[in-house]
Length: 234
Image 1: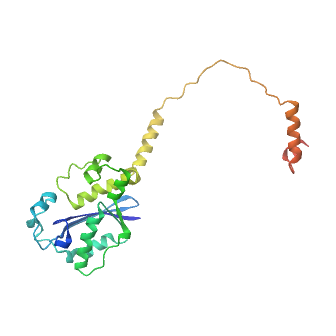
Image 2: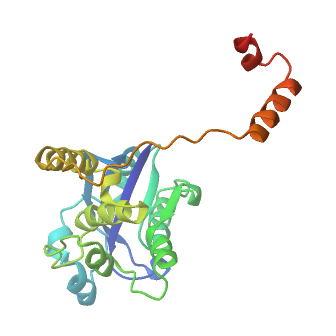
Image 3: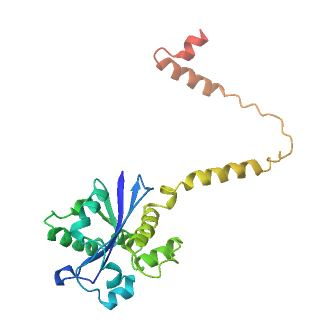
C-alpha cells in the first residue's frame, strides 16, 4: 500500500486571489513504513511573497527567483504521488492550491477519493483539544525542535510520524515491535525462576460416585447410539 504524506507552502491563504504554491514536500510510505523516498520542490510563484508569509515559512523572493515555475515541475510531482493515497493535514487548504495550480497548466484536478485528512482524524480522536501539527507532536512526544519555520518537507516528515501515531502508534510501521520483542526476550532471560511454594501436605481425597449417580450415568449411556463407553466396557 503506497501512501504519500504531503504538505505545501504558499504565498498566502487563497489561490482565487492570486496566491501560489512555492514549495511542495512529500514522504512516501509503503505499508505504513517510510520507503526512504522523499520529494522537495521549490517553485517560482511568478509573483511577490508577502512579508507575513515569509515570516511563517522563511522563503523569500530572492530564494525562489531562479526556481522553476509550476508548469516545469508538475509532472515530477504527479509521478511521485501516482498510485498513492494522499495523507494531508488540513487537506482542504493544500488540495485547493494544488488543483488551482493544475488547472493553470490544463491538467485535471486531483481526486478527493484518494485523500486522508489527518486534521479530521485528530479532531475526532481528541475532541476539543488542539489539533495543529505542533500540538500533535507534543501529544505524541515527536521531536519538532527543528521546526523554526514551516517547511513542506519537514512538515511532511513530522506528519508521517503523527499519522502513524494516529493509526495506533509508530510501532505500526517503524519496526518498534521487534525492539519490544527483543526487550521481552532479555527480560525473560534475566527473570528469576519461580520459587517452589511449600505448603501443608494433604492426603489425596477419593470422590466416588453414589449409586444414584452411577445409575443415572448408565441410563444416559443407553440413550446414546453406538456409545464408545458401552463398546469399551464390552
